[in-house]
Image (cartoon, rainbow, N blue to C red; front, side, top):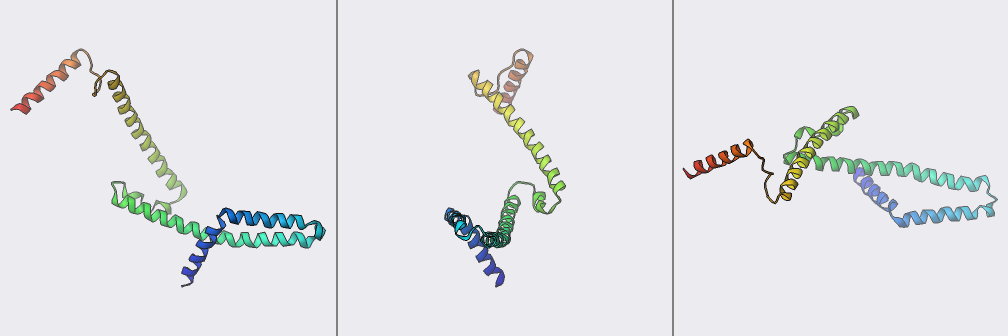
Length: 164
């Protein structure tokens, strides 16, 4: 019960805190406070009002925003875990947010290396396709000499097998 009420309040306060109107109101308060300084002789009490107000608001907002961030992070992890579970991705990635920073860094490095290898393969295929397109064919460029004869012989053999 208390958790649901707190969650609802935390979400609402976090939402309101992020609105441009909230920022404008806070700026207006600071401007009014600054302009009122000469009327109060820039006294210690005048300074204490803004210091105390901002300290209290900051103190409370830290907990509300942290609560919201924790829930958002957990929800995103649950969604990602479900996507990993139902896809062709590696299930051993589920729950890695509970590992140490160095363990996560090691996994991230391995993933980056795998992605670079994959990118290299894609780039190589794209380059072959581009060269083939320049030559006016849809296939890889033809080679000359013995390799061409072997390729042609192989194609003829395949055609003969298909016909039989």
